[in-house]
Length: 127
Image (cartoon, rainbow, N blue to C red):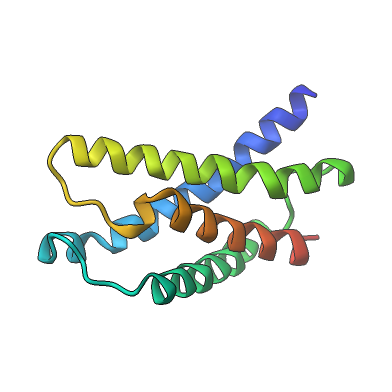
């Protein structure tokens, strides 16, 4: 059980780091817009595609899932995106409290969608 927790934490950290990289890539847009007029459907599709792309890149770097046990892979597929989504949402709240503008990936729904697509690509293609 302890081994699974370390594996799950590794997957959460991997997804969190990739989400932070996307968040840092959106930094220039944070300063230009105070309240971004974006289409939520377009944003959701964009984050789903970015998550799938990040999943492919992560497979290039780490070709195997960190969770080795077959029975726990589905649990990982469900739990990891939820945890990564909450972590990014907490980061968004933290940034807003300090007077920064929140970008869309710092909202739970977009962060969850990004992490879910990343996890689905890793789940399907990892060895």
